[in-house]
Amino acid sequence: MENISKNITYGEAVSSATAKSRGISNIPNETILKSMKYVAENIFEKVREHFKKPIKITSFYRSSKLNVAVGGSKTSQHCSGEAIDMDGDVYGSPSNKEIFEFIRDNLEFDQLIVEGIHDFNMDWVHCSLKKSNNKKQILLMFKNKDNKSVYEKYSLERYNELIK
Image (cartoon, rainbow, N blue to C red; front, side, top):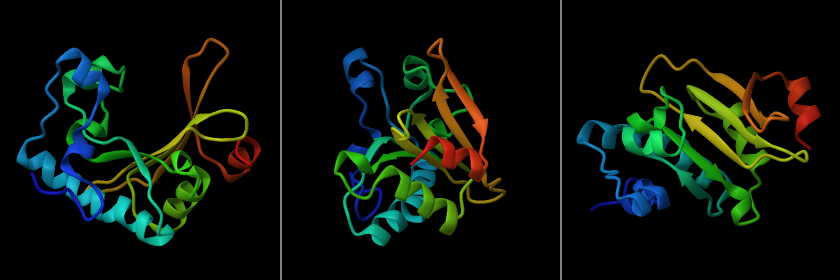
């Protein structure tokens, strides 16, 4: 199978330890594959080109069955190939903070989420993109005292309190 984009292989885009261990199919159809290529070119490759450093993809495409298995949102854009999760901290640079701020300030997106906030850091950056009608929504996600995910509307003031 051909690459999704210059720096994303097809295997990397559909890879899932959960799918593999549970025998769940995670193969996108042609429509989804087109959406994935659009996200790869207009989000991932632009971030990669800007920083000129490798960035780990932690989640890209998820079949509906896989999305249920990992506890994903019922409306997850991962299932339509319109969302990608990136973790720059895996390789040390760029940081997730730098990735988030670059996307926020420079790219078109539908949804941008600072994920897994703790100790003034984030675990990864979630970004989705549609071919039209992008809402430019930004959210902050962290775990509450009961270990439940909480999503909060972004404000620069709150972001600066949570992320250093």
